[in-house]
Image (tube, rainbow, N blue to C red; front, side, top):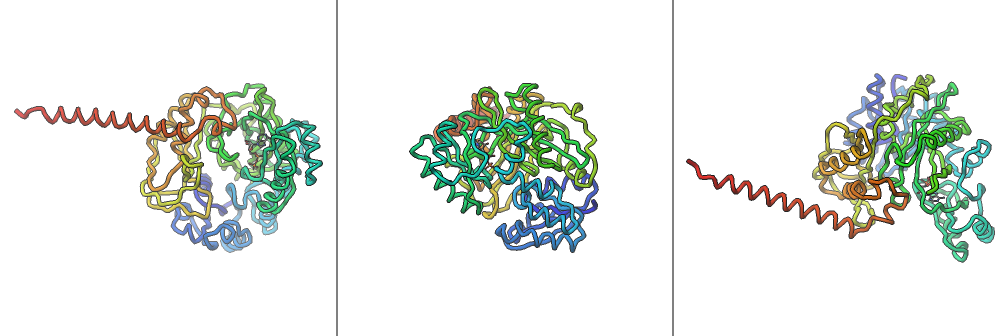
Length: 480
Ligand code: ADP
């Protein structure tokens, strides 16, 4: 593979290009009109505009991207995450045009992209599943019957769901009918597919996922877990590896289960098998993401493996040379997704220009970003500014480093999730490892963040005053 095109933008396009460059592979960036001056365009060896700002006129135009790839003699396409990364037709289109799709085969994407098809695929592999039904349900009466069998609360989910969308919790029987109707109509408008199913709602779960790599020679390995329980709107904000609750035995069991899930769909490349873990440490298969995850850096830091490099090697047909028994967890890594969002106002998107943008630097700090000072945050795409990742010998060290890094990350012009990240890292529940997916609901209130911010402001004012008084003292020393 001599040249790859990255069908994405922002931090992940840059992340992929860095590894490609390291491997001596030339890169092609694609960009929309809104991203003409974006850093990912400048970093690439070649670049091509693929359309207007809105993603369905640019980054989602698989046909256009293939056309440009053919013109530029591209050998492979890396889709990043989001956009076309889990689009089976796009993977197929690459295959048809003799361009290597750096990811799994379209068949596996299709299978795992539909939550019901995924449940069906893993059925014979003895994987623990969340209690519920593994077929589409449309009749509210039938739904009520199923609910009373598995017990309330239940969760109605869209089969084609993603990004935390299309889920409805139902607490009691009288609400089943109405919530079913809403879920079906939501699923139809969001995903063009109204199929919904029912799962038991696990009340205090932790979201723990396993990174896997599979090659075309029959090797499937797991690269330990990532804990992604700190979420807002069912979407991850803080991730870490390893998880503070897994024992070696449980890690091994979940790792083996993840390998089986990958085998069930004849997987190829890097993928993630997501599980929910309840308060008795039972784990249940949730879904498989058939792409590189946003939070992959925490795995890279604790395992010492460059996952993008492995993806490329696998796509070239090479066998994974790493052995499962040689893999060890080294240290602890935490990632904070720095979104341009107002964490004091229900995490609403915050639009604006990055008047000040200075990232923290130092040992154990990694920032994956695609922005620079003076840039406006485009309204068309995901509002993630960067990923702030810290690495330490222990969890405590990684947490402490994260707090320091947040303090040294200067962003003005838009609001970000940095203060929220600090709140999490300073919170007793997070520090002690005693938290679940309801961290935000249970502990995070505007008042609490305000108190934390005000206390900090007071402290800053006191330090300022002390420095001022000391300066004054020095100034008053009479000149001889
Ligand atoms: P999506 O594909 O939209 O990301 P997932 O199935 O991966 O949906 O679930 C996203 C999040 O929703 C999980 O991390 C968890 O917080 C919550 N969730 C999903 N299923 C359940 C369940 N059965 N019980 C409790 N929480 C759930």
